[in-house]
Length: 190
Image 1 (cartoon, one colour):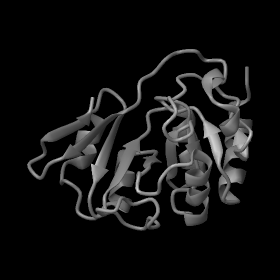
Image 2 (cartoon, helix red, strand yellow):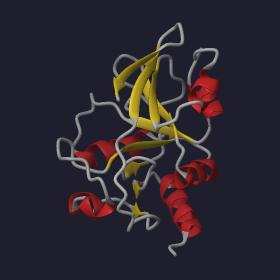
Image 3 (tube, rainbow, N blue to C red):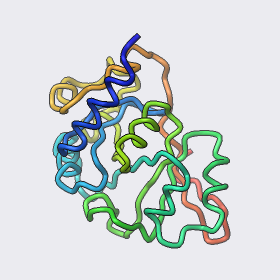
Image 4 (cartoon, helix red, strand yellow):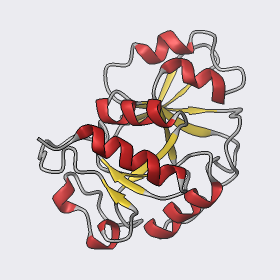
Protein backbone atom coordinates (compact mmCIF):
# COMPACT_ATOMS: atom_id res chain seq x y z
CA UNK A 1 0.00 0.00 0.00
CA UNK A 2 1.28 3.44 -0.92
CA UNK A 3 2.22 5.57 2.08
CA UNK A 4 -0.59 8.12 2.54
CA UNK A 5 1.28 9.89 5.37
CA UNK A 6 4.47 10.27 3.33
CA UNK A 7 2.49 11.88 0.50
CA UNK A 8 0.88 14.33 2.95
CA UNK A 9 4.28 15.33 4.39
CA UNK A 10 5.80 15.78 0.93
CA UNK A 11 2.84 17.83 -0.29
CA UNK A 12 2.96 20.13 2.75
CA UNK A 13 6.69 20.72 2.20
CA UNK A 14 6.14 21.56 -1.49
CA UNK A 15 3.16 23.83 -0.74
CA UNK A 16 5.17 25.70 1.91
CA UNK A 17 7.86 26.38 -0.70
CA UNK A 18 5.33 27.77 -3.19
CA UNK A 19 5.35 24.63 -5.36
CA UNK A 20 2.72 22.83 -7.41
CA UNK A 21 1.41 19.35 -6.60
CA UNK A 22 -0.44 16.81 -8.74
CA UNK A 23 -2.97 15.04 -6.52
CA UNK A 24 -6.21 13.02 -6.51
CA UNK A 25 -9.45 14.68 -5.45
CA UNK A 26 -12.99 13.39 -5.00
CA UNK A 27 -13.52 14.18 -8.67
CA UNK A 28 -10.55 14.19 -11.10
CA UNK A 29 -6.79 14.49 -10.55
CA UNK A 30 -5.89 18.08 -9.85
CA UNK A 31 -3.07 20.56 -9.91
CA UNK A 32 -2.79 22.33 -6.61
CA UNK A 33 -0.91 25.00 -4.74
CA UNK A 34 -1.32 27.31 -1.77
CA UNK A 35 -4.43 29.31 -2.65
CA UNK A 36 -3.09 32.31 -0.71
CA UNK A 37 0.27 32.41 -2.53
CA UNK A 38 0.01 34.60 -5.64
CA UNK A 39 3.32 33.38 -7.13
CA UNK A 40 2.32 29.72 -6.69
CA UNK A 41 -1.01 30.40 -8.42
CA UNK A 42 0.90 31.98 -11.33
CA UNK A 43 2.80 28.69 -11.71
CA UNK A 44 -0.52 26.84 -12.11
CA UNK A 45 -1.65 29.24 -14.86
CA UNK A 46 1.70 28.84 -16.64
CA UNK A 47 1.73 25.05 -16.35
CA UNK A 48 -1.83 24.74 -17.67
CA UNK A 49 -1.25 27.46 -20.29
CA UNK A 50 -4.54 28.80 -18.98
CA UNK A 51 -5.83 32.32 -19.59
CA UNK A 52 -5.83 34.26 -16.35
CA UNK A 53 -9.44 35.31 -16.89
CA UNK A 54 -10.51 31.70 -16.28
CA UNK A 55 -10.93 31.36 -12.54
CA UNK A 56 -9.81 28.48 -10.38
CA UNK A 57 -11.45 26.40 -7.64
CA UNK A 58 -10.28 26.48 -4.04
CA UNK A 59 -10.62 23.51 -1.69
CA UNK A 60 -11.24 23.83 2.04
CA UNK A 61 -11.44 20.99 4.57
CA UNK A 62 -14.60 21.87 6.50
CA UNK A 63 -17.81 23.81 5.83
CA UNK A 64 -17.01 26.20 8.71
CA UNK A 65 -13.86 27.25 6.82
CA UNK A 66 -16.12 29.14 4.41
CA UNK A 67 -16.80 31.67 7.19
CA UNK A 68 -13.10 32.57 7.27
CA UNK A 69 -12.92 33.31 3.55
CA UNK A 70 -16.34 34.70 2.59
CA UNK A 71 -17.86 37.93 3.95
CA UNK A 72 -21.57 37.61 4.68
CA UNK A 73 -22.32 34.16 3.23
CA UNK A 74 -25.91 32.86 3.36
CA UNK A 75 -26.83 32.47 7.08
CA UNK A 76 -27.43 28.72 6.62
CA UNK A 77 -24.34 28.09 4.47
CA UNK A 78 -22.75 25.48 6.73
CA UNK A 79 -25.91 23.35 6.93
CA UNK A 80 -26.50 23.76 3.19
CA UNK A 81 -23.00 22.68 2.21
CA UNK A 82 -23.00 19.75 4.63
CA UNK A 83 -26.18 18.42 2.96
CA UNK A 84 -24.69 18.18 -0.55
CA UNK A 85 -24.78 14.56 -1.67
CA UNK A 86 -22.34 14.96 -4.59
CA UNK A 87 -19.10 16.94 -4.82
CA UNK A 88 -20.33 20.51 -5.22
CA UNK A 89 -18.38 23.69 -5.87
CA UNK A 90 -20.15 26.87 -4.81
CA UNK A 91 -19.44 30.29 -6.30
CA UNK A 92 -19.29 32.92 -3.56
CA UNK A 93 -19.30 36.72 -3.72
CA UNK A 94 -17.36 38.90 -1.30
CA UNK A 95 -14.37 36.64 -0.72
CA UNK A 96 -11.63 37.57 1.73
CA UNK A 97 -7.84 37.13 1.88
CA UNK A 98 -7.24 35.64 -1.57
CA UNK A 99 -4.77 37.14 -4.05
CA UNK A 100 -6.25 38.83 -7.12
CA UNK A 101 -5.18 36.01 -9.46
CA UNK A 102 -7.39 33.52 -7.58
CA UNK A 103 -10.52 35.69 -7.52
CA UNK A 104 -12.68 36.06 -10.64
CA UNK A 105 -12.92 39.45 -12.32
CA UNK A 106 -16.39 39.92 -10.80
CA UNK A 107 -14.97 39.40 -7.29
CA UNK A 108 -16.36 35.89 -6.87
CA UNK A 109 -14.58 32.64 -6.09
CA UNK A 110 -15.49 28.97 -6.51
CA UNK A 111 -14.94 27.05 -3.25
CA UNK A 112 -15.53 23.35 -2.58
CA UNK A 113 -15.54 21.66 0.79
CA UNK A 114 -13.64 18.50 -0.05
CA UNK A 115 -14.99 15.08 0.90
CA UNK A 116 -11.84 13.26 -0.22
CA UNK A 117 -9.89 11.80 2.76
CA UNK A 118 -6.50 12.66 1.23
CA UNK A 119 -7.45 16.26 0.38
CA UNK A 120 -9.10 16.78 3.77
CA UNK A 121 -6.01 15.48 5.60
CA UNK A 122 -3.69 17.59 3.43
CA UNK A 123 -5.61 20.84 3.94
CA UNK A 124 -5.95 20.26 7.69
CA UNK A 125 -2.24 19.59 7.99
CA UNK A 126 -1.30 22.54 5.80
CA UNK A 127 -3.84 24.81 7.54
CA UNK A 128 -4.61 26.81 4.42
CA UNK A 129 -6.91 26.34 1.44
CA UNK A 130 -5.44 24.91 -1.74
CA UNK A 131 -6.16 25.54 -5.39
CA UNK A 132 -7.56 22.72 -7.45
CA UNK A 133 -7.87 22.66 -11.21
CA UNK A 134 -7.96 19.72 -13.58
CA UNK A 135 -4.56 18.28 -14.45
CA UNK A 136 -4.50 19.10 -18.14
CA UNK A 137 -3.28 21.78 -20.52
CA UNK A 138 -6.05 24.35 -20.97
CA UNK A 139 -8.37 23.27 -23.79
CA UNK A 140 -7.20 19.63 -23.74
CA UNK A 141 -9.55 16.94 -22.48
CA UNK A 142 -9.57 16.36 -18.73
CA UNK A 143 -7.75 13.16 -17.78
CA UNK A 144 -10.17 10.95 -15.90
CA UNK A 145 -7.47 8.73 -14.35
CA UNK A 146 -3.80 9.27 -13.52
CA UNK A 147 -2.54 7.34 -16.56
CA UNK A 148 -4.33 9.79 -18.85
CA UNK A 149 -2.44 12.84 -17.56
CA UNK A 150 -0.04 14.31 -20.11
CA UNK A 151 3.71 14.19 -19.50
CA UNK A 152 3.60 17.99 -20.04
CA UNK A 153 1.90 18.05 -16.64
CA UNK A 154 3.47 15.14 -14.73
CA UNK A 155 7.02 16.17 -15.58
CA UNK A 156 6.57 19.84 -14.65
CA UNK A 157 5.01 19.73 -11.21
CA UNK A 158 7.03 19.80 -8.00
CA UNK A 159 5.46 16.67 -6.51
CA UNK A 160 3.25 13.85 -7.80
CA UNK A 161 1.15 12.11 -5.15
CA UNK A 162 1.39 8.32 -5.19
CA UNK A 163 -1.87 7.80 -3.30
CA UNK A 164 -4.55 6.40 -5.67
CA UNK A 165 -2.27 6.54 -8.74
CA UNK A 166 -3.53 3.12 -9.82
CA UNK A 167 -7.22 3.86 -9.13
CA UNK A 168 -9.14 3.60 -12.40
CA UNK A 169 -12.52 4.69 -11.01
CA UNK A 170 -13.99 7.37 -13.29
CA UNK A 171 -15.47 10.30 -11.38
CA UNK A 172 -17.16 13.32 -12.95
CA UNK A 173 -16.13 16.91 -12.25
CA UNK A 174 -17.94 18.59 -9.38
CA UNK A 175 -21.35 20.15 -9.67
CA UNK A 176 -21.05 23.95 -9.89
CA UNK A 177 -23.70 26.08 -8.18
CA UNK A 178 -24.44 29.56 -6.96
CA UNK A 179 -26.59 30.12 -3.87
CA UNK A 180 -29.16 32.84 -4.34
CA UNK A 181 -30.07 35.31 -1.60
CA UNK A 182 -33.20 33.28 -0.82
CA UNK A 183 -31.13 30.11 -0.34
CA UNK A 184 -32.11 28.56 -3.65
CA UNK A 185 -29.48 26.78 -5.73
CA UNK A 186 -28.73 27.96 -9.24
CA UNK A 187 -27.05 24.99 -10.94
CA UNK A 188 -24.40 26.14 -13.41
CA UNK A 189 -22.95 22.67 -14.13
CA UNK A 190 -24.77 19.49 -13.12
